[in-house]
Image (cartoon, rainbow, N blue to C red; front, side, top):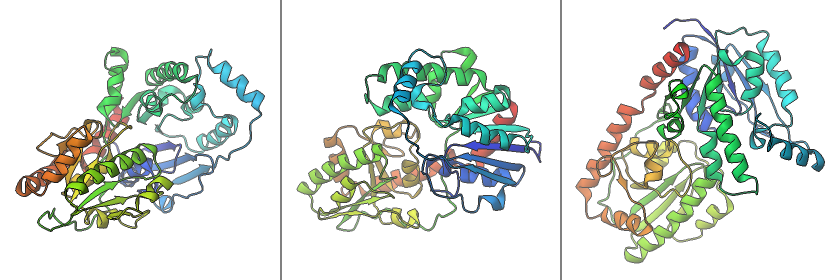
Length: 400
């Protein structure tokens, strides 16, 4: 691999420090590794009203430029006209449209001029039409991370335009894959959207997230010999799919404690929504809110349970729980982006009753549970190590 390349990474969320958001969990280790071999320049177009700062990023990158978007009122007439026009346009679909696109373009042109780079990596798909206009599609490698189309479908029917938007987003995503140099996704589920289109399939690759270990500490082995077993859920608790899953888990937990009161529930994660905070009023349920070191709280849990209701792609929380050598009970939706084997690396259950039965069986099958926990950790170490993933991602960027 050639060294000393100038790489421009463009983000629509803050990519640093790690654990700030889903993007930073992926890109904090990637940027750190690449900056040791290349000149890394970063341009960030923040989400409206995102006030954080990528602390420490300037120490490892050659430059960091930030455009802070703000929410401004848009006249209702303009909104209606834009919405209707997007129904008949092949350009960027309405859910991806930015009313401040002119300001974003001006910012990115200012970044492009002083940094003639060997490679432009566009992270996510927001504002990519602006990047294509400025840098040229042939100069951009696209790390889409998640599928726009699948993401739209997960949001459900929110307006009368849902079906129209779905078709437009599907077409737009295919367009982006077709014109850029190459596109990567985190999960095979998202990449699979293009496998039946040969000219697109050859430009698509899958590079999962690795497990972030820079803050890893000693995590105890599963201990189900004690009278009380602690169940756990982990994630950003303001994120709708995690809210739905935690509320479902609470119902499962209630069914479990009716049969065995020696269970507790620990919900770990920042920005807990009001309905999640409400769960803490139940005896035996604790909601942590933000924590300084997630591994310290993973250590407090015996069994992690992820009964996801929505969401797709790779579930980082499942990987971290497995790496912590904890038994994981999840459904096929949560496992779809992980690819672990049922009864070997974790337990896959679908119905609430099946979840409850599996949780109750933990005490009766202690040795089997320890074996599954150990196998799960070995699986994550083998398949989801950043040391293995980053060189493959870097090779793809420079070879497509």
